[in-house]
Picture 1 (cartoon, rainbow, N blue to C red):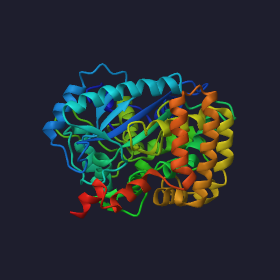
Picture 2: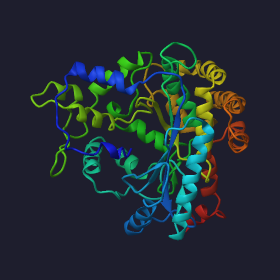
Picture 3: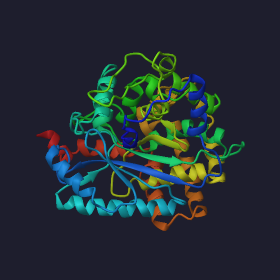
Picture 4: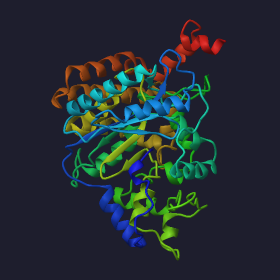
Length: 431
């Protein structure tokens, strides 16, 4: 959510027309060609490892982040509005390279945080604390004012959520298992299976919410013009261009003072106004849209909750990469999730019945469990073909045995922990 490179507001504004916006979006958001690169963005809560339910003071966080910014990392390090830490990998030529690079960066980050008595907590939504702003910047002041208009969910997403975002090339222009059209469609159907398999946010303020992925339920409850996918079945470029133009403008940046937060003005409206936007305004507008699959030249899959454990993030990265970039696994995934499209219906993700079931039930849903079992098996077979190291293959096998084969997701483990008075989480809640 940070998108800090888009935060300036001093660029000269050369107005763009509605037609120019459509042409620009088609060109810059989908860059086709052989799938060669991948990346991952991992977000974490920063807490005391022995007492993760307690908040960390802003002063302590600021000191820790100042020290972290001195590290020579390959990944980009950013801080989210609530103080969550994000590492965004450099584009990698292989799964092995991506895992190795991010793992080395995380080792360095953890080592430095330990000196301050802090650690990284992987969970999709803060299970204990109410949302608290850490960053005070014009972007986030404007975002908060905008999102508060439609309810409290936006503030929770800003300040309390964490995810594993997998970034993949858009694919070939031509049809086929690695083609853009297929990969766009697959991302939105398989996305529900990924939500269910990796759901890990069943709590809010220490109590079960009734959702395995509370984080996903909050996304679905937010302004659909900002968080929903385009209607299914349409040409990706045309559908996304329409969505960009018809999405509400979050803010109009100003060089001095608070940014303006218009009420009900779409980007299309802005292009037709007496003071139309410029190219920099379009680029910034694109960073304020949060669909489950966001095209940014590549495809950014945003639906996966942050995972527990030091290496939990590796499993969704590996499984997703295998199911998209290995042609045989991609074909299996397509055939597996195709029957689920009927259940999804005509509503877009994440508000259709399939995505709702995934967020609420995880792999307790029989259809999603069967689909996950087939997809994880296909991914396991593909990983050797992709040159995945033993460490990655073993992590996927362990997750499959512990969760997928048993119709469970990481949220179920967290629910078991808080129900057990012998567990530290359970003890804390019983006092």
